[in-house]
Length: 91
Image (cartoon, rainbow, N blue to C red; front, side):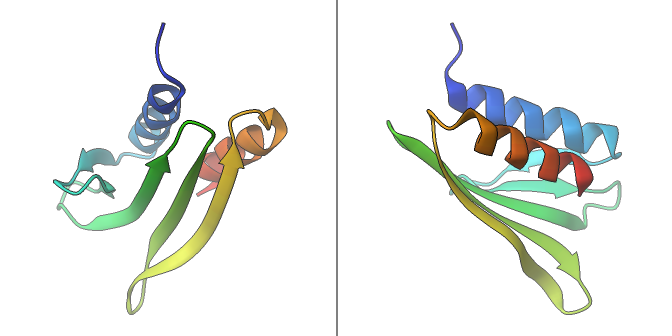
């Protein structure tokens, strides 16, 4: 059985791949979605706990990466998790 955190990170990786971006992880656990020129388009700051996960999504803007979305979702809130996944699809 896979941990829920795997489901989320795998979903983000597949979604970014469909957008032509590659997902990389930094040494401090940040996920960077980069284009073919290694420019960071999105940054996902994910934190997982026993009860929930939080994510801040930064997106490339004119002045660098800017906060686009921030969530804190309990594992038991399936509708909020689906909304988060739909938001990532729409990026």
